[in-house]
Length: 65
Image (cartoon, rainbow, N blue to C red; front, side, top):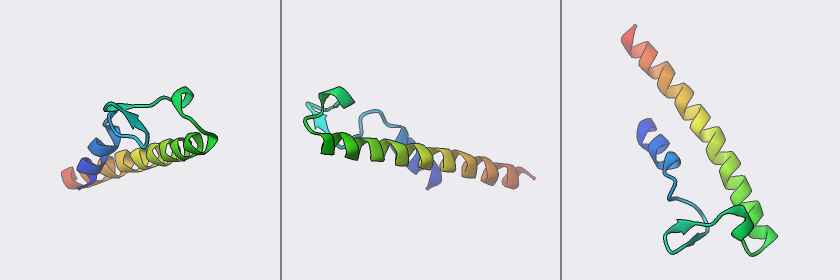
Protein backbone atom coordinates (compact mmCIF):
# COMPACT_ATOMS: atom_id res chain seq x y z
CA UNK A 1 0.00 0.00 0.00
CA UNK A 2 2.85 2.42 0.83
CA UNK A 3 4.52 1.77 -2.51
CA UNK A 4 1.24 2.31 -4.39
CA UNK A 5 0.69 5.63 -2.64
CA UNK A 6 4.24 6.73 -3.46
CA UNK A 7 3.75 5.81 -7.12
CA UNK A 8 0.52 7.81 -7.18
CA UNK A 9 2.23 10.87 -5.69
CA UNK A 10 5.09 10.60 -8.17
CA UNK A 11 2.77 10.59 -11.20
CA UNK A 12 3.47 13.85 -13.08
CA UNK A 13 -0.01 13.80 -14.65
CA UNK A 14 -1.86 14.38 -11.39
CA UNK A 15 -2.77 17.83 -10.20
CA UNK A 16 -5.60 20.05 -9.09
CA UNK A 17 -5.71 22.24 -12.17
CA UNK A 18 -5.55 20.47 -15.51
CA UNK A 19 -6.16 21.62 -19.09
CA UNK A 20 -6.42 18.96 -21.81
CA UNK A 21 -4.82 16.31 -19.55
CA UNK A 22 -1.87 18.63 -18.79
CA UNK A 23 -1.24 19.93 -15.29
CA UNK A 24 -1.10 23.72 -15.33
CA UNK A 25 2.09 25.45 -14.22
CA UNK A 26 2.07 28.07 -11.48
CA UNK A 27 2.21 30.94 -14.01
CA UNK A 28 -0.80 29.56 -15.90
CA UNK A 29 -3.20 29.68 -12.95
CA UNK A 30 -5.96 32.25 -13.04
CA UNK A 31 -6.09 33.35 -9.44
CA UNK A 32 -4.00 33.61 -6.29
CA UNK A 33 -6.41 31.14 -4.67
CA UNK A 34 -5.59 28.48 -7.27
CA UNK A 35 -1.89 29.23 -6.81
CA UNK A 36 -2.27 28.84 -3.04
CA UNK A 37 -4.09 25.52 -3.34
CA UNK A 38 -1.46 24.24 -5.76
CA UNK A 39 1.37 25.39 -3.48
CA UNK A 40 -0.14 23.67 -0.43
CA UNK A 41 -0.70 20.48 -2.45
CA UNK A 42 2.91 20.46 -3.64
CA UNK A 43 4.33 21.02 -0.17
CA UNK A 44 2.07 18.36 1.32
CA UNK A 45 2.90 15.87 -1.44
CA UNK A 46 6.61 16.52 -1.01
CA UNK A 47 6.41 15.84 2.73
CA UNK A 48 4.34 12.71 2.17
CA UNK A 49 6.75 11.40 -0.48
CA UNK A 50 9.68 11.91 1.91
CA UNK A 51 7.83 10.10 4.71
CA UNK A 52 6.83 7.22 2.42
CA UNK A 53 10.38 6.86 1.13
CA UNK A 54 11.75 6.73 4.67
CA UNK A 55 9.04 4.33 5.82
CA UNK A 56 9.62 1.98 2.88
CA UNK A 57 13.36 1.96 3.61
CA UNK A 58 12.66 1.16 7.26
CA UNK A 59 10.23 -1.63 6.40
CA UNK A 60 12.60 -3.12 3.83
CA UNK A 61 15.60 -3.02 6.17
CA UNK A 62 13.56 -4.63 8.97
CA UNK A 63 12.35 -7.36 6.61
CA UNK A 64 15.89 -8.27 5.56
CA UNK A 65 17.26 -8.33 9.12
